[in-house]
Length: 365
Image 1 (cartoon, rainbow, N blue to C red):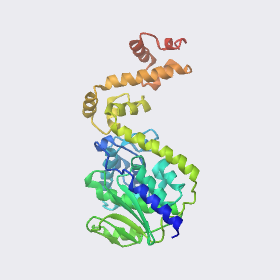
Image 2 (cartoon, helix red, strand yellow; image 1 turned 90 degrees about the horizontal axis):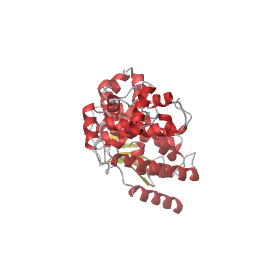
Image 3 (cartoon, rainbow, N blue to C red; image 1 turned 30 degrees about the vertical axis):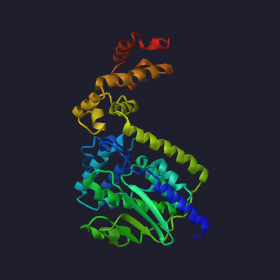
Image 4 (cartoon, rainbow, N blue to C red; image 1 turned 180 degrees about the vertical axis):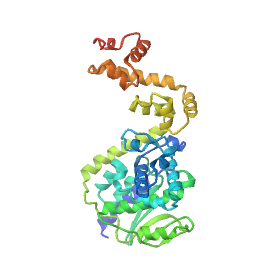
């Protein structure tokens, strides 16, 4: 390893050590947003194993069609409920390994594409330390490089304890795949370290990773000797990486801010995305993975009722849509979730004392 390589390695490792990680995440799991990629991967695995999708999604408030929607809101409580269903329906304690083998770097969204165009494997894993929330990670991910090779470790689990083993298996399996995605060829670890005691399905680890598994270890990690971490992804592009990295920084801050906001504000954001769907308390409670009673209580804590929140969101949307000038009152009423234009006209008069088209001077159509 030459002087320039050692300098790059040292700089990358300092950045990783300075990353905040996931241990700061406050609140309950239902307050933390999640991505849908792992749920989608679980659905794919269910199709292969002929497990009914309804069994996987039971109790999550989600449908198979919704999982593919770009506007769907998912929280960590829903995601982890799905994982429990998968363990129960598959009757396979090691199924996390199979799910992880479906989670390529592309399932990490924009941050995953930033990894693909980064300057080195080490720099790519820096993204995982810097954007854990946006990537939907439940662990802090760290990489150590030396003359002997590279070690990728996970620590400080930030999920529900009863499925930690499943999450560990899924994460390590995905990380093996991501290393291969970055290098551009299949890369297998020489050793798998696991903090847990020997599992009943220990042989599954050997088959899946192609190496021996060491239990009761000091960390959960994959040890690679065939790569150094300084390998450059084939699509590396410094200018594009810097631009995409900035976007990911902004999105990570945005996701972090969502956790710190009032519950009513998060509920409002969901309603704004699809008013025609979330005009009912039942639909909103289902999407937020809670009962109507819990939804009502949490809104009341923020000084809000469901009806007042719905009225507020509808009024703001109506004002914006009316200013467009190209939509009919009937079309606007439909977007706001009203069953007929007359109901919207009555509501608008109640809000403003005027007919809907009076706001911009055009005739009411």
